Length: 261
Image (cartoon, rainbow, N blue to C red):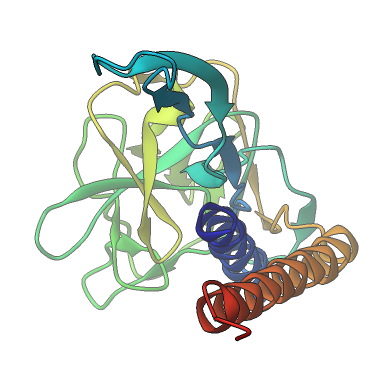
């Protein structure tokens, strides 16, 4: 019974993790460039059970005989929480500094401490020095890894390859990056991803920049709501299983071995 409590507890913990993950996806359903988080679950390692018993016909004693019973499952556990980088819908904004990406690429950005990260959020603006920045202040990088600096006035044009011009004069090209292994990208908060060292960054060749648009979140609200209800019920089922087994253990402790005399 105690083993059953452990299994039910592991199931409840996985269900709670699923609820938290889905809730985060729902909270970012309107976040530009957001990629929903998936939850991968696997079985915990099994334990081999054996029966150790001394042969009662052996009057001289001896070592207990070992008889295999079989494998015992120990419940479930979270294996990983990767991002789903599927393309989101493109929405027109009419803002010349907004850029949506169609394809697998990312914008390269650096924060105030110089930390490099990647994002699909192309809702850009200019700071007081003309530096192209994300909404949180991260500097947008060009193809050479330097911040993009633009005049404070003039007609900004960004072509499908990310080349930037203002009133016909060139100002570099957006640093669009693709990865050979997106599973090695890890979320850093603020809709940013960092390369853990195995992502394989390279200059984008299959990505198109669309000026005056943004990519919407790829979170599916209806599916998320259905999954949220299912996982809440899964949590409740495991919770009831724990309570039932706890009651059985309590009754066993109080009644087993009690004398009726």
